[in-house]
Structures are given as C-alpha cells and as structure tokens.
Length: 183
Ligand SMILES: Cc1cn([C@H]2C[C@H](O)[C@@H](COP(=O)(O)OP(=O)(O)O[C@H]3O[C@H](C)C(=O)[C@H](O)[C@H]3O)O2)c(=O)[nH]c1=O
Image (cartoon, rainbow, N blue to C red; front, side, top):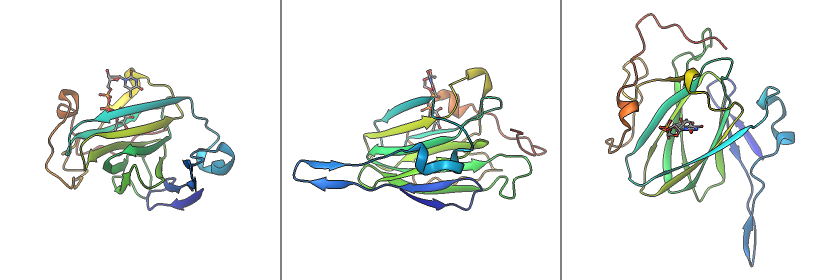
C-alpha cells in the first residue's frame, strides 16, 4: 500500500496493488498493520456501502461528533466520484480547508479521512457504488453535517447537482463565529 499524505493533516491517499492473472485480479485493500499510526490506535468497526444511480448526485457532507468522531476510509467500487472532505477541527492549521480527489472503480485508490472532517462526494457517472470503513459506530444523535452550498466551505462541486437528500438540503449553515469542533 502506498500512503500519500494530503494537505489536510492526518489525511492520506491510499493506493493499493492489483495482482492480475488469467482468472482476473486480486488486491489487498486494507491492512491495519500497513496503516499503523495513521489509524491513531483506532480500529474499523463498521463498513457501509452506498449506491447512487445518477450522475451529479451529492451525498454529505457528514461527520460525527466526539466521542463517536470517526476516521473513514472511502473507496469507489464502480463509476466515478469527486470525493471531498472539509477540516472542521478547532485549532487545525487547515481549519475550514477542503481537499478533493477523483476516485473510481478502476483505480485502486482510497481516501483516509481523519476524525473531525466532514465528508461528501458528487458522482461523476451513473451507477456509483461507494465503500466506507468507519472506526466508530453510526450514532445519529452525534451526527453533524455541513450544507453542500455553505459559503464558509465554498465547495466547488464539478457538476450541477442532480440529486440531494431532503436532509442534506436542510443541513444547517455554519455560523459566522463557528471556530471548529473539539475531538
Ligand atoms: C451512515 C449511516 C446511515 N444509516 C441510515 C440513515 C438513513 O436512514 C439511511 C441513509 O443515511 P444517509 O442519508 O446519512 O446516507 P448518505 O447521505 O449516503 O450519507 C453517507 O454518505 C456520506 C458521504 C458519508 O460520509 C457518511 O458516511 C454517510 O452518512 O441510512 C444507517 O443506518 N447507518 C449508517 O451508518
């Protein structure tokens, strides 16, 4: 696994190998031993999957508050996404900065997103499947969100948005004096 640090502290692009043979291919996608300190002593406890039918769909941006703040590893299984995360950590040198990567089902790349960052993506094709590895259990009462068009985040979605959940449409805007979440 190649671990490439990203401009947001604690985030990385994970590139894994795909060993091909006459049957097809095999890849080791995750190894706690390979990630070591990047996991900060946390372990994967929940794995999720989503399917988005239509190009232009936006999901997010979501995060969980402490004590269920979670590290996420996200990978695209089919189709293509523009995957983005926003640093909400109080005191972080990259507070309120976002970073995005193109992920797709053909290239073995995944994003490691540290706790305290809100995550979202926009599909760039139809029929997108995403895999999410989480280090905390889903805890609705500790879920937080940033609205897709929050001017303080200024996320530059590549395409016009075609699908957005009612909940994500109604996500609150960050107050002008929001100075981050504590973990
Ligand atoms: C996350 C989650 C959700 N749910 C339920 C809650 C809703 O009834 C339904 C769909 O949830 P939601 O609308 O939050 O799904 P997305 O909008 O795709 O959000 C996800 O995608 C964005 C980009 C993320 O980063 C989050 O990991 C995740 O929240 O599944 C569960 O039952 N368990 C879970 O772990």
